[in-house]
Length: 165
Image 1 (cartoon, rainbow, N blue to C red):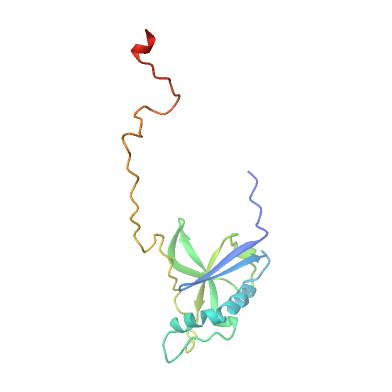
Image 2 (cartoon, helix red, strand yellow):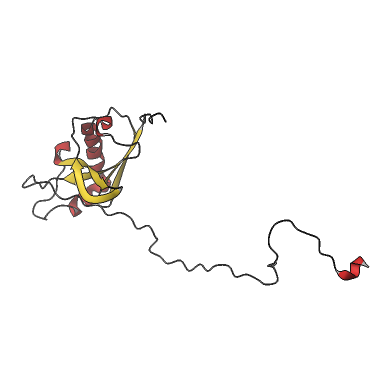
């Protein structure tokens, strides 16, 4: 089989805590630095101000995002297709194709502590697969008068012995 062609457009998701930033229409020659600039615009929006306050390392030193150097973009490390809980920081000078990112890649945001400039741990809360509400839908009961015990398939005409004589 010939090798798969590289995707022409990428859909990149950037995740942090409970926020997901979707970047669509990203070309393979886009650098990680350009992705960081787009992520910074999204993180500085009015909607995400509460998030920034909630992820600050302490109330005395709130997390401030002034430039794209205040955070890194990371890729989740996988072992046999399963996440290991560790993340690899992507080089900002390299392009998406050089990192081998897929067309529907999920990247993670790692912030820096404003006082020490040490990287904070990557924290992501994934939504629950099941709804929080328990649905009480019961399976429909089978009505004996409607259900025919004969198997499905070709239907045959039913004859009685009285009709044959």
